[in-house]
Structures are given as C-alpha cells and as structure tokens.
Length: 185
Image (cartoon, rainbow, N blue to C red):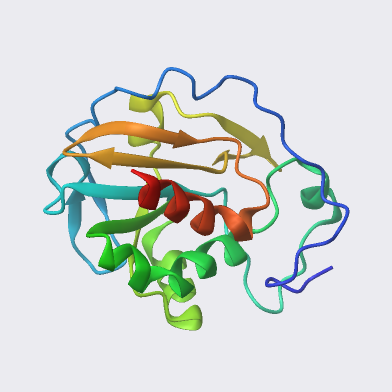
C-alpha cells in the first residue's frame, strides 16, 4: 500500500510497554531544535503556557512505496494522517492557547516538504541527532538500520510535562484525543 493518507484496517495495535511512564512531571530540557520555519526552538522557553509536542517516526513521500514490513510494526504507520489531524484541528488548539509542534528525527528539509505538501500551519522540529529523545529517554526503534522515534504526544505547561499520550493509536485520532483532554482540564 502506498497511499500516505489512508490507514490499512489491519494495522497492529501498539501496546503500552511503560517506556513513557517516567515522563509526567519531568521538565523539558533546555535544548534548541531546528524548525521548519528556519529558526531554533527552545522547548523549555515556549511563549505559550501550554504546548503539545507530538512525535512520529517518519513521513513518507508521494511516489515512494511504503515497505510492507513497515505496516507490521505496531504504531509505525500513519505519520501523515497524524500530522494532518493536528492541521485540521489547529484552530481549536489555538483557541485553547495551546501551541503545537510536530517532532521527528527526519532532517528539516525533508520535513519542509511535508509542511508544503500538506499545508501544515505549525512547525515541525528536527531531532535528527536524538538530543531531545535521549535527554527525555523517549522510546525509539530501528527500521532498515535507521533509528526512529516511537509515536507519542506530550502536553507541557510552562516547560514541564503534565500529560503523556503513549502509545498513540490510531494515529489519525490523536489530535482529537489530546484536544478532548485539554478541554476537560
């Protein structure tokens, strides 16, 4: 299957392996990551008091086949629908005065292609060197010799993680789930 927007119905569901249990209450590190807007973003110094960071392994590109093995990794498939769901609900996050950032280990130029192609209204941050992932001890996996970040979402308030969504499944519903949690708070 090579359609980046459609999710196969038989995707394996990821299980909670406890890999993010240590994150609630943790301060975001004072790291700056390059964004698709061409600036460095310090995670611990966001202007808004509340920020959502959603992490995903990697996005595909039109015309490049998705390896069959990719669909067999629980939680791997669905990065484009995940990102587009945050796009579609971005105004709702803004009404709640909540900033949104996507984060992956892909380089900024690769991420910019996704931003242009799908008209994302928020920035994506590149953790190409895994500085953030390693500092927070985020779960990762290796596919075809490439280390990737597992799919998750964090809500931070004034630089401290207050909520973690992990595992995330289905990926195209994560933005709705996070938004519902924010509205309850």
